[in-house]
Structure formats: structure tokens, C-alpha cells
Amino acid sequence: MTATLYARLGGYDALAMFATNVVSLAQKDHLLGRFWANRSEDRNARDLQLLIDFFVRETGGQMYYKGRDMALAHAGMGITEDDWTRFMDIVLGVAGEMGVGAAEGGEVMSFLESLKTDIVSA
Ligand code: HEM
Image (tube, helix red, strand yellow):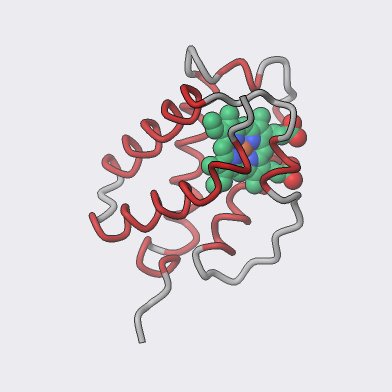
């Protein structure tokens, strides 16, 4: 039996680090930073944990995700194609830095692409 993507990516700590790095770069990004403007540190910490929980669950880890679905969570934000491309560039950069393998990286990208129509709204 093939190990879950969760296990092959390195389990909880690796996924948490991946999500933390991606969100941190997105929040500082000149294009994407506007989505997190004027939000409290606590709000951001809670959203980051929801992202980690979601990612763990979706890759086959043991986690109960208590957040909203992707369409509801991002509705009305006006996330554009350019925003999406930028976000995916950040994902690729972080995956490269963390040494994610080609096979796992491809699976992560396909998973994220499958969410695109729910997230991009403008
Ligand atoms: C350009 C791309 C993206 C932007 C700008 C973005 C931005 C945001 C922002 C600002 C929030 C906070 C929502 C709020 O105000 O309540 C949020 C929530 C969230 N996002 Fe994203 N996001 C993007 C892509 C993604 C992707 C690809 C995923 C999945 C891997 C994701 C997963 C989540 C989750 C799980 C939440 C929390 C849902 C909840 O509050 O219940 N996002 N996103």
C-alpha cells in the first residue's frame, strides 16, 4: 500500500512548516499582502492553524477540520488569477527550499489546482 501524501511529505511538522512559510511570505508579499491588512496576530494565528488542519486532513493525516469550505472561506475577497499565480509561485518556492520531491510536489500542486475554482473569484 502506498503511504499517504501526508506521510510522504514528512508528517505534521513538515506540513505545518510548509503552511507557515507559505502564509508568512504571502502576508508580506506586495501583491497578496492586501488580503491580510489590518488583521490581528491572533486572527492570523487561528487562520494559519485552520490551514494546517485542512492540509493535514486533505493529504491523509488524522485531523478534524473545523473551518469553512474553500468557497465560503474565500467568497467576496476578490482573489484574481494574478493573485493565484503569485500564490502558487510562493508554494513552489517553499516546496523547493524544503526539498519536496518531484512526485510529492506534483501531487500538492494538483491538489491546490483542484481548489482554484472555489478560491479565485475575480
Ligand atoms: C491567492 C490565494 C489565497 C489567498 C489570497 C487566501 C487568503 C485567505 C484569507 C485572507 C483567509 C482568511 C479568511 C477570513 O477572513 O476569514 C483565508 C482563509 C483560509 N484559507 Fe485561503 N487564501 C488563498 C488560497 C488558499 C488555498 C490554496 C488554500 C488551501 C490549501 C486555502 C485555505 C484556507 C483555509 C483553510 C482558510 C480558513 C478557513 C476558515 O476560516 O474557516 N487558501 N484565506
